[in-house]
Length: 240
Image (cartoon, rainbow, N blue to C red; front, side):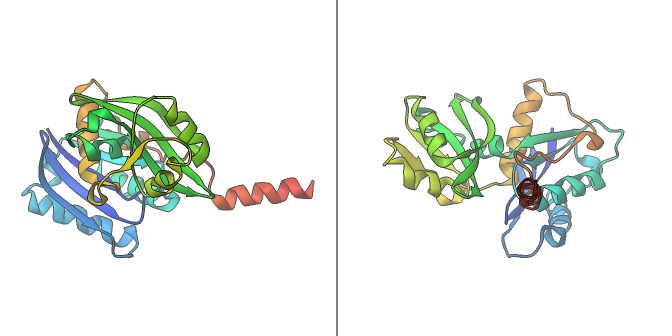
């Protein structure tokens, strides 16, 4: 099973090719260039380094959101450009769920609730919660946008330490002690979105019986409306 995976839901972008859990190649950039500039060249490079063409790929996986509104749209559009719409070989993945795979196999990871947190600004995060049991990840909380204090109270209810990942991890960790929550940060190199984890998550979903979809069925996932849309709605309400 060969999977080409893509992530550009935040400032970095990455592409990876996995075969039956083995990383054949990967590319990662965080240079400040737009994803529209870097994504396609990274796809070409990842395939070339894996000595594969698109014809050799069985499935295409992507973090479909939540994340940067622009980044998510670019990633979904790029994937649609690669795949014929009548082929059912795409696996959309939750950005938050894929980040739980960053710490798969990390010593002691089974002792924690893994909490991916992406900074949504204004002391809010996009978040969810998962628990590793053996080689399987179990979802404890659905993807949501939530204020940090509310998240910490929810996590306390699980009654065990929390391992934070994501670009909002430090925000949550810094507030955890005052909230009475025992928590730790994932190592820096394992904290952020990565296409390798996207592919690992997609592979697990396929093995669990997920039915792949066509590229036309992949849509960006947003947990709240874009800021411009929220501000427009607020102005209209104030004008009433």
